[in-house]
Image (cartoon, rainbow, N blue to C red; front, side, top):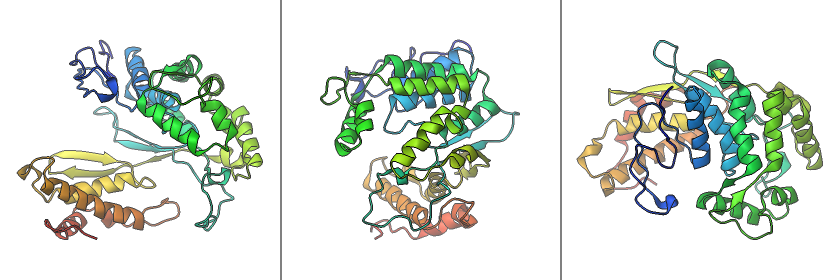
Length: 355
């Protein structure tokens, strides 16, 4: 792409100024012709825009942003977790595809391994990470920029630091306060000199920078078969976790066909299939909302909020009842059908909340 404007979660060059001097409270309106990157982190979104300016495509920007989020949004960004990426190729370049890199239970896990009294904040609760393999698959299938280039901004953020916002400060403080027994967590994410994090502080993560540098130079195998894998296995042994060398070496991302639906006869909607539960929920919710005229009332009217709440109630009921890993669970096809959506919608009383 050429002439890509400055677009991030913050402000674009061709967008109005924020409505307040506090960026955390600003209402951001972005208008752009050539590309836009949206994430929960301004530093990470800026990384994605930088990749577009270097001539990268949307997946280049997504991969670089994902690695940057592993640094700049500790609450959810990760290289030790997993996720899903939905890619809609340009017209004529193929059908939409989902890359599934959700974490996988270690081979030693068993169905009844937890009791209600047992803490899940232990080494044993950690699953085999999928993020690095998933981003590798996305890079191999769709990206135009070199792998190392996509990691360079994240390495820079980790090594030289970034300015934390109010949300990152609050979530980091909450996590540290809730887990005083984890000395390494306190060491890595504790504020130099002590005290709580505040918006405007600079967070530097040199250990993470070294790990990302290793991934950039040696490739994803460093995480699954190399030095990073050795560190993960050693830590699992120290804390009685279940992940083994075989679990890491055998992990593979999976390419899947997305769920699809047409909303109000006009909009094509694609969403991740199981083991994602969110995609199923979205398709189910839209099938129910299709029945109602949502323009009949104001967006925030009691009627509109009631309908949306009841729709989500039903979708999440089924989310708890049916989905799982399709390798182990048979998930009914009817859940995402228009017929089932109409049936669920008919059960909504516009005057009474469902138990």
